[in-house]
Amino acid sequence: QLKGRYEELQKGQQTFEKELTSFARQLDDIKARKIAISDKRNMRAKLERKVEEKKHT
Image (tube, rainbow, N blue to C red; front, side, top):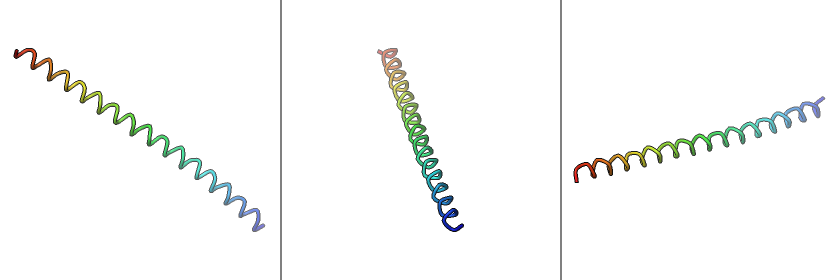
């Protein structure tokens, strides 16, 4: 009975580790998307500044 419980705990641990890995990947994806959005905003701001500068020259 103790062996069965041990195997059950091992399976639980494996499931937990798989879920943890999955969450870590999802978090990496979210961070990458956040960086991409920030980069796009920065590019847009640069372009808008260039347009404004050209209007004044």
